[in-house]
Image 1 (cartoon, rainbow, N blue to C red):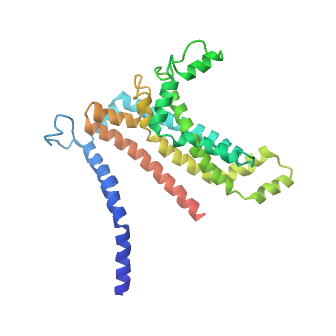
Image 2: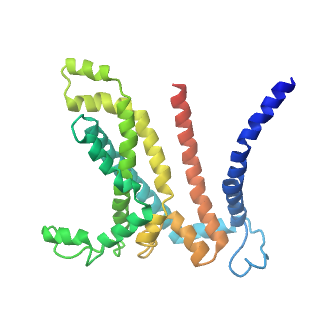
Image 3: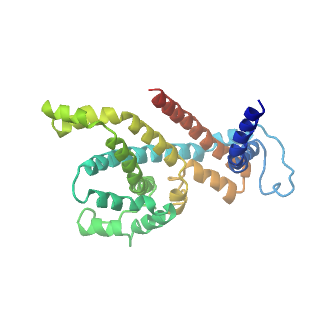
Length: 296
């Protein structure tokens, strides 16, 4: 009996550092941010501590501002646009590199470079390349005769968001390709051999074998991509800062602007909590999918 109790407490002691770490670095900021969103904390009363409970007033004010709706729509467009193209291009590259040819491992390694570069550096690179006058994008397009006048990639409200999406697609393709390549390598070879004996060509195998068998992996990649992309901050902040005219404002940059540019800390906390709530729901869906996959 005593030995069982000792073993049981030893198990708790092993997980104790991880629990303390989670509570201190994740639990406390999260709970503090939720409490902050129900108070009226700004630059005037931050130091004095003279803050009061205001209930849902910060959330009501947030919903009444047009920029909040714009930031939600921009976040959704940015996420869906990025994830769709990243998965589509990543899938076809994974299929391409699954073919056994001489330089496939080397080329696949080269493809990973864009994912290994720090996101802030990538944002600065694309900001320079998309410059209206000196950017290499416009120089190439004008040299090839595709356009006559330079395109204002980052200063036009109509295309600024899609310019950032292009940069993010370039960043995310290798990650999707890597996960999908792992999924492709686990597909059974005998199914493809049987299909070949029945006269199926490459396209028929892709549509009727590869995609259906890879469906669980595709769903997981899609959910991970959604979670990772929805919380974007650094790419948007460095390339446009949310402008021009809020055309690239997303939920994370809006929360930052309220908190650290306008010093409305409670309003910024409310915006951050909306972002957290959406990602929390998506994470629950992802965990549900993982559990179903483990059961099956």
